[in-house]
Image 1 (cartoon, helix red, strand yellow):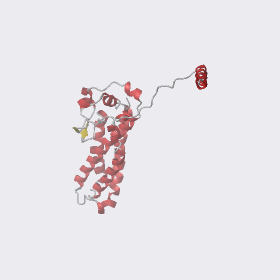
Image 2 (spheres, helix red, strand yellow):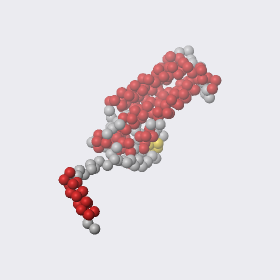
Image 3 (cartoon, helix red, strand yellow):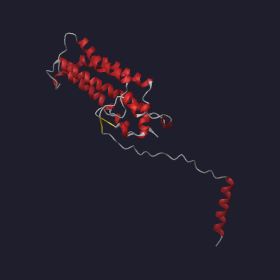
Image 4 (cartoon, one colour):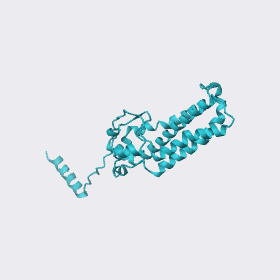
Length: 225
């Protein structure tokens, strides 16, 4: 019962490459509008809506690790291994990682907004009102925070030993609905990966006396015509 047999866990690792692209999209969105008279207050409010508020929700109800935001595995179609891994999400370390991700969103937004003028000639959001740009940025920050939590959770679950997973009771359907944020259409039903497990059967030890008797018997067989 190894978590590495679950394909959705490996699919969640796509966030490693998607997060930098979303940061670039933040730059292009902010480059299309001019800052208002109080840019610092605008950034703070945008961060509070797009990162702080979602972080409070995700700490209370972590993102379902079997959800890709738009698609998810149906609750009633989840295997026992998947429900065991869902229970392993409830750890203070993951909640702390979510809070850290939300806190890092503020300096990231602050720096990108200050450098956004560099990308204004190539921004497809030119002449975009500042309010619309800030709302789009808040939405992007919420998506980035979701993916950040999913990435941290996936790395945590992939590092769990099969013995730890086997000793964890599965999460019930009622607990899944109440304790996890399950978003997306219930259309994902991937089959588990077939991993080659090395054989753990130890080789049979042959005693020295038995070896000598076998060798002597083979020698006599060769002498018989």
